[in-house]
Amino acid sequence: MEETRSTFKGKLGFVLAAAGSAVGLGNLWRFPYLAAKYGGGMFLLVYIILAVTFGFVLMITEISIGRKTQLSPLKAFGALHKKWNWLGALATVVPLLIFPYYCLIGGWVTKYAGVMLIGQVKQAAQDDYFGNYISSTADPIMWFLIFIIATTLVIVFGVNNGIEKLSRVLMPALLILTVGLSIYVVTRPGASQGIKYYLLPNIKDLSIKTFLAALGQLFYSMSLAMGIMITYGSYFSKEEHIEKATRQIEVFDTAIAFLAGLMIIPSVFVFSGGDKEALGKGPSLMFVTLPKVFNSMPGGRIIGSAFFILVLFAAITSSVSIMEAIVSGIIDAFKISRNRATVLVAVFGILVGIACSLGFGIWSSVKLFGFDILDFLDFISNSVLLPFVGMMTCIVVGFVIKPDAIISEVELNGEFTMKKFYYAMVKWIAPIFIFAILISSILEGIGLLKI
Image (cartoon, rainbow, N blue to C red; front, side):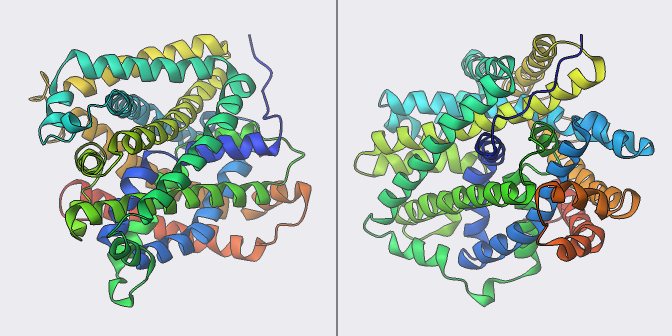
């Protein structure tokens, strides 16, 4: 039985849901690391410039494709041009690969939120705590199941009663928590050095690597080329203005990324005595360094609890959007009910997620082309498929259906103020830049380049 396609009840619901998708672990554990590594203020400046230009073009393209076709990415590209249906399938593979391990990491976050709340900050700050936790068998799987079941329940309730209601509650709460924690951190004694490093650009820190790192971060921060914005765009009312909504999503997402850096970089600077190398990448920052920071500060239990609850909010809104992109595709392709599609995706996610978890423990000897299970899925999805799908999307819009197809959708509700800029970006500049990201991501993944 084919279901009537849902729509968000208003622009605010859409903006908060899309922003919730964009605001995730990429903002909170990848952005601060890259900002610290690539000159703080210079990286921040480059990132903001790219976000309001390059990121804007990609996001408005994906939202417009979704609203124009009223389909998930699995079918949307075929609806634009039948010879490009394969790109829709590839765009659906990206969230399919990301979903299981993202929920596993969401389980780690849930565990640490619980640890902080019950006052075990000192234990979590021990060097071997995180390693012992993820290499165990039952504990990480239990927390993973709690997280993925919570995500599944939101999807079962649908677009309005699930995704939109969750976003309307969690996104304002996430913003309040981020602002509150940032204010607390920047007022700590010794934080000024980290604040200056983070906010003041130094031209000496500008390099090709800074540019590539900031450009690559856009994909993580804005949920681009994952099919998510196409899916959410298909639920966006034809009565609303896409350009304005896209700007609001960008502002929200960039503000959270900025505040995450302001919250994390000065606090680690204080803890490490000004050593920016203390800001490790990914899990080492979130689950090893920051617990040590919280343990060393007054009121660490409260601050640590608030921080991991914030991260949990960001993780759940993103995991919901990733799952919805897959569920929407299955509904479009097989015309089955939302509940059946959701259960199928949940079962797949649980099986693959458990394998990822065991890859740190009893299956640690299992390697895929030299990667453990989680890192392999991350490499294929984020380093290879994600930039490739983004590049091919620009080529489809720029040379197959032409930019006017997107512009006409944007102009259903008013003028597209950046029309000429959009033409140039989507046809020529964006594909070249994304190709550079694709090459640099692959080289980094196989260890030939460090970003």
